[in-house]
Image 1 (tube, rainbow over the protein chains, first blue to last red):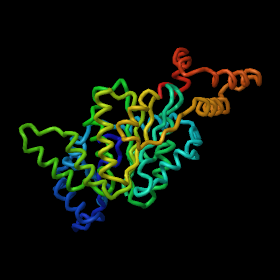
Image 2 (image 1 turned 45 degrees about the vertical axis):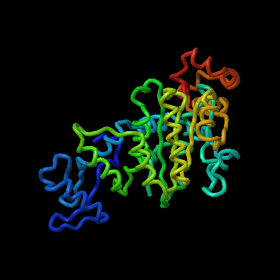
Image 3 (image 1 turned 90 degrees about the vertical axis):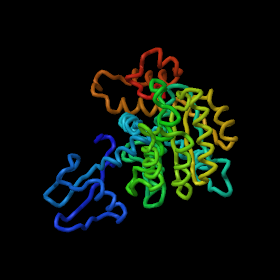
Image 4 (image 1 turned 30 degrees about the horizontal axis):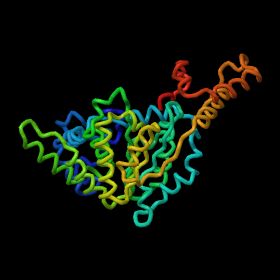
Length: 127
Length: 215
């Protein structure tokens, strides 16, 4: 599992002697189908017989089918480099507020906010 | 609640949107264009990536996506995704949710791809009126954005000085060799560097010291 994508897997808290699973019922059924039996699942591990961690193959396949790209890696890298407070002024501008506060009925003309700037002005760091 | 996977990181707009999402039914997704990866960042992969982030939340993968996945498996060798298919899934699962899509460096997207992506975003906005898009890019793509999105765009220019000054202040404050710095040198740095234009930064190979160069 890609460590940069920590929510890819599913954490299921289970009682090994019962089928109780502390997840929504539909989710639990899906996990049960995908990972049974746990003892044969190479993608799961146990902690003290109370927590099973499963990365169902189908879920991973669906996500990869949707896209192989991982923009959160770039997001994480930029976040690590960013100096706190850079671009904070943007949140106070009339343009940002207009875009941010627009509701569907009355201000659909402000559905997109485009911030332009020359190379090097720090556009990525205001994301 | 659906949240972008990278919400724990330090960012500006995305952090604000994630903070506000709280326990509400809000989704925040992002994409960073990169000229070096322009071939991989096709419209299908880009839009699919947004959808992937959307369905990766704690709610699990929606049935409509699972169904489409199973359907395509029946084709010989499996059928690839198409933009139209992504847009249908997008509309089905985002129609009633407040959704924020953040896209960086639109100018680094291939022009042919950009045309398709902007048209797709327009359709997403049309089909999901609760969706908001935040984009950054160089000024030369501004008119294209306005045209493709039917003029429903608010524009804001980003100036160099804000980021540079904050960055310099941070570096000077955390200087590991303060004994080598004098008041005069510090004043010169604070005066000279913000006055340099962005092309000069690139020419000076300042990329390592000014990490936003190119962004």
